[in-house]
Structures are given as C-alpha cells and as structure tokens.
Amino acid sequence: MTVPQKKYVSQFTMMGTVISLTLFEPRQAVVEAVYDYLENMDRVFSVNRPDSELSAVNQAAGQYPVTVSPACFTLIQDALAYSRQHADSFNVLIGPLVKLWRIGFGGQQVPDQAAVQERLHLMTLDQVALNATQRSVFLKRSGMQLDLGAIAKGYFADQIVSQLQAAGVRHAIVNLGGNVKLLGDNPLSPDGRWQVGVQAPAAPRGYPLLQVQTPARTVVTSGIFERYFEANGHRYHHILDPQTGYPVENQVDQVTIITAQSELAEVLSTVTYFKGPIAGATLIEQLPDTEAIFIDRQQQVTVTSGLQPRRKGVFYL
Ligand code: ADP
Ligand code: MG
Image 1 (spheres, rainbow, N blue to C red):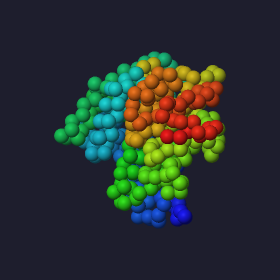
Image 2: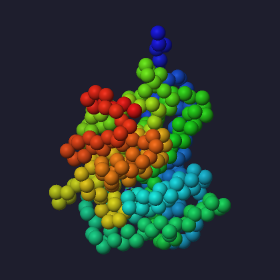
Image 3: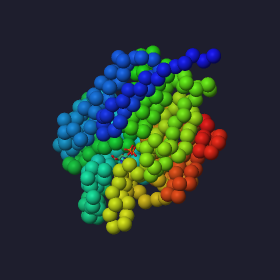
Image 4: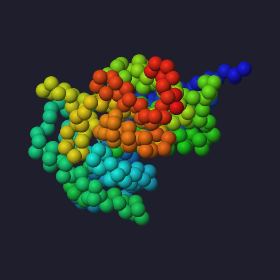
C-alpha cells in the first residue's frame, strides 16, 4: 500500500515568465523564501531594470569597475568561462546585439549590416576585467553589455534546489518558465521517476510531443519558437550567432538537455542548438550523465544514447 501524497503547487509571474514550485508537503515559509530569493535575483540581474547590479556594470562600460554581490560575481565569472570554452556559439557579451535586434521586445525589422558589425566589436571577452578581491567587474569599452539571459535561470534553479535541500525538503519540482529542475524521487510514482513533457516546438502549451521519465535531473530547452519576428519571408529568432551577429540559421527547432546542473544545461542547450543533432550529439555523448533531445524543422527527433525509447514518444533515463 502506498500512502497517498498531496501536491502543493505555487505559481508566480516573475522575470517575464511563469515560475512554479511543486512541493509534497505544506511548507508555506519555504515557498515564501523561494519567492523572495527570485525577487532579489531579479533586482540583481535584470537588464530591464536600470537600477540592477547588472545594469550598473553595463552602464559603467568604458568608465570604471563596479563592485557587485557575490552571486552576481559568481554568475558573471561562470558565464565568461563558458563563453571562452564555447566561443563560436555562447557569448555572454551578446547584450549590444540583443538590444539591437530587440527580438521578443517589439523589434520588427532587420538592423542594417553596418550596425551589426559595429556591435560585434563590443563582444570581445578579453575586454572584461574581473577582480575577485574587490568583487568588481569592468567592461573596458563603452557600449559593451553583459546579457545573462541564456544562463541565469539555470543558476537560479540550482540555487533554489540547494535552498530547498537545506530546508529539509526531499521532493520538489522547480519550474522557471520551462527550465525544470527536480529534487529527490517522485513520491507519486512507483519507481520514483519524474515525468517531464517536452513540448513540440510550434505546438500550444500543454500538448507535449514527448515525455521523459527520469530520476532527479534538470531538463532545459532552447528553442526558436518562443521569441521571433518575421520579415521578408524570413524568421528571425532570439538565439544569435556571436560570430555573424545574425540569428542562427539551421534546421534545428529546439534542443532539450537533461543533466544534473541546470546552469550547465542552459549553456549546453544554446551550444548544441548551434551544432545541430550530429555535432551536438557528439558533444553530449562525451559528457557524463548528460543527454539531449533534438527536434528539427520536420519534427524529426534525435536523442542521445542514454535515453531509452519505452513506447511511442516516451523516453526513459
Ligand atoms: P529562453 O529560455 O528565453 O528561450 P535561452 O536560454 O535560449 O532563452 O537564451 C536566449 C537568450 O540568451 C536571448 O534572449 C539572449 O538574451 C541571450 N542570447 C542569445 N544568443 C546568445 C548566445 N549566442 N550566447 C549567449 N547568450 C545568448
Ligand atoms: Mg539556454
């Protein structure tokens, strides 16, 4: 006999997305703490708030170093390291380009090529000076801008799960607008695995194309259907190529990464989006306990070797 378990789902709208936290015991104080944490992180990291720490760093570009909080320093340091490691695809200095294209923020036209070229010059990684003792960040050239949009939610998810663990929570689902991180085993399933739906790229929400049955991992998707605009019969989406300055053009609609650390999953989802199912899968196969699901324009699904097909549309990890 299994003991019936209740689910406690809390939802809030924040950071331009819907955040949900699922617990299996009534822990209102824990829910409040997560809410407060995210509200605080928004104050630190939002590029849409002129008074955030990140905005202070960006506004001081070309002028002076800015001392930031430990969380801000750590995430910038990580993001720069990943940018060096995956220089062809991931670049945390993408801010000037993101602002130029304004994709998903009312941008409806293709910027002219000269403007794109100009912004590319503001994305050189060695133009950032970090000082760990002072905990300061200095963008050496005026106009440079950090944009942590492709990594921040992963960092928050990892931090939230650590906080839940520290509070004695043993099972949870943290969902930051589609970035999912699971804690412990699923008390509602006989084998403890969680079921995570993977949305078809263009489908309405709530109609998953695939399902992954997995022990506690993070499941993170990068896709091109959430934010884009169309012009001249062309679709321009929000994953920008740091080499060309234009949205990546390939046959991939979305990539889902399944691994332990959400921050890493965020980076890998962007990087493998660039690489596509062949080179992308090769990269993922080299990493321990990391899997990927690629969905291309024709809705072809490619999965890495650790994902076992169970029945149609269901993979088992
Ligand atoms: P989302 O979950 O919002 O779809 P992603 O994790 O796919 O976001 O990251 C997309 C965001 O990351 C963009 O909105 C932009 O802010 C930033 N970005 C776009 N291209 C790159 C890139 N090549 N490297 C790093 N960050 C990027
Ligand atoms: Mg990402």
